[in-house]
Length: 165
Image (cartoon, rainbow, N blue to C red; front, side, top):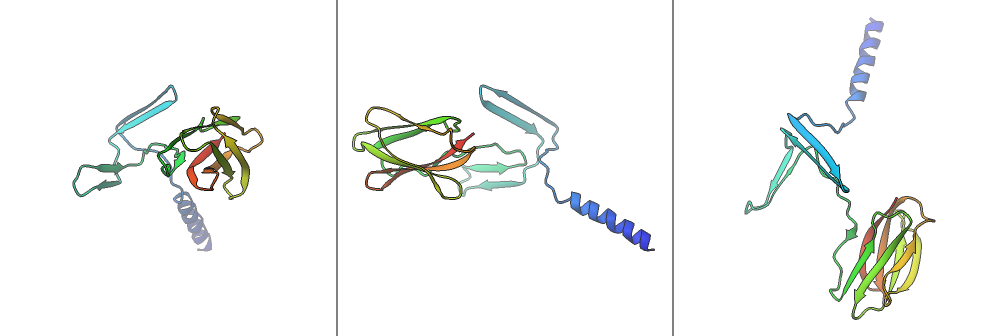
């Protein structure tokens, strides 16, 4: 009897252990994916929707299924002022990024970069009158960073999520 109970216990544990993982596959009648020029498109036919959200006027519908797109948010929040245009590129980056700003009022900015632990890994005042400034990333590890740009008074102009590959 103990042998059967032990065997049953092992089978049950194996069943429950394998049942804890969520796999990312879709049972569908048709589907395809293609990639060209850095753009990836995939679709499935017959995928079951697991949630549908609609606004009260039924003009906006969001249907969530098992296959979802992959988006990386690189700008956090809207700029606090309309008197400047600030760009950080390329993002994701490998060796360096460019900080480019056009403004009639702001001449200097302070760029502070934080790692995911909240520690400052870069802090420098940049003068952007003569065009974009380059920031070297070679000495930084591959990770995600928060890049905050402020004016000389300490007012936050914009915050970015920077991805270093």
